[in-house]
Image (cartoon, rainbow over all chains, first blue to last red; front, side):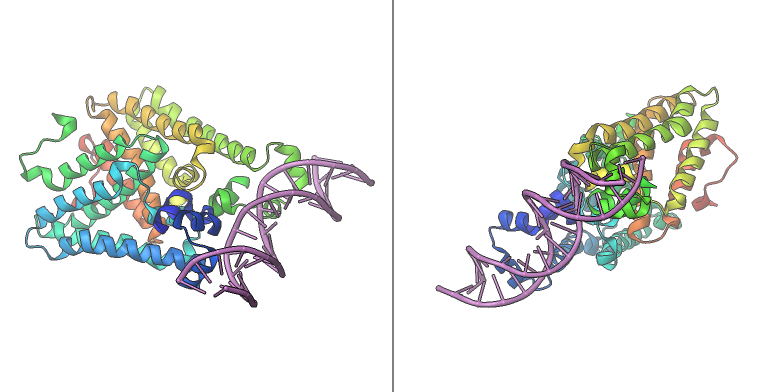
Length: 182
Length: 182
DNA sequence: GTCTATAAAGCGATAGAC
DNA sequence: GTCTATCGCTTTATAGAC
């Protein structure tokens, strides 16, 4: 709920008045829950997002005995989380415009953990030397897909990108066919 | 100059006081030059950016007799424009956080023109059916590279992404060797 | 714990002198 | 064309009643 206000309006655009309206709480209640004010609210949201990705995506990528299944799960969870391109990545948005300095460590951690967990999974399913490059390119493409989908107001950009990722990460030893080559 | 203030602080964060300081002009002068206020200033900046890319990148991609040279030029100009990953894409930032509705047509136009011009160039050098997908993936990767480079505070992310693009777009029929496979 | 009232500062924008 | 002064509004944050 709190996260959605930041997602929809950005850090600067999410005024306390707006947050109060959307959460149904007065400023007194908000400052009681978050004595640090707006900065602490955003930090809590970023921590919540980080925990969600850790539990649903990163952990499996690092630990599962079936890395290919974990990668497939990553793509499916990513599609669901970002509502197939209709939802913005709050961490990416904070990195670009809003005071990156305030949340720099959390922003960097979110992306570094994703990249490193995916690198591990890729190493365990054949992509030895290319694992890091492939992981970096994947995390980066997801962010770019969200930017482009929103800029063009066309969520299908995001879906096409995920399909290409599926092919790149899993397709070469799978029965699946790349959509652009079928 | 005006563009740099928006780039560094976002639309919401670029207050008129800050703009006045950086440009060395008072509010009176600013409103004389831009009667529409802050919205008109941002529109002028977006138009200036659009014209720059049209002249330096899009036009060559569409019209040159040597599409491979135009693509190489695109990669070089892109690297230079974004200062090898140290500079943010204002259009991408506006698309994500700041009032996208105010500048939606300019934002969509920027990316659509880039994608379509690149599609034309790719069609003329062998990538027939894959040209659109490849162009979309390229534009998207550049944006993602900027997000990730800034999030991780590591400009080299952008350079590695450009190298991979060079390989994907031009490498297969060229003597160049992909850095991650050499 | 939640509310209202309010403080102090910053915002975009305007008016008018020069 | 550039400036200063100012308007009206919104912002974050606090104080204190209940």
